[in-house]
Image (cartoon, rainbow, N blue to C red):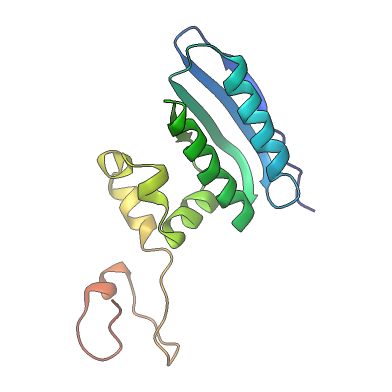
Length: 149
């Protein structure tokens, strides 16, 4: 059974960075509570310039969880606060990559991605209509029948 989301404020340091730690699942059942919690912490912390979400304990999220992260990003940006999604687990990385929101929510991910990050981007790919897939991420660059765009 999935663990409910437990957003915890770990510290509101004098360095202008508000830190929240996520544990459990961010889904339709708790996303409003999380957004309210994060918004209240932002409002209660003066001179915040960055909101750092430590996602290491995030066990999963659904489409509402992703929509909540996008809404938090929008609200933080409007307040002049930069959102950082730190310690992204594979489930979050996959959701951001598949939905095309990685560049939006983590604009500097390309600058920090190393070889291990690039290879994980090939972990999700569709297969041709016949259900036969190639042997590796490089197959996505192949040309000819069955090649993927």
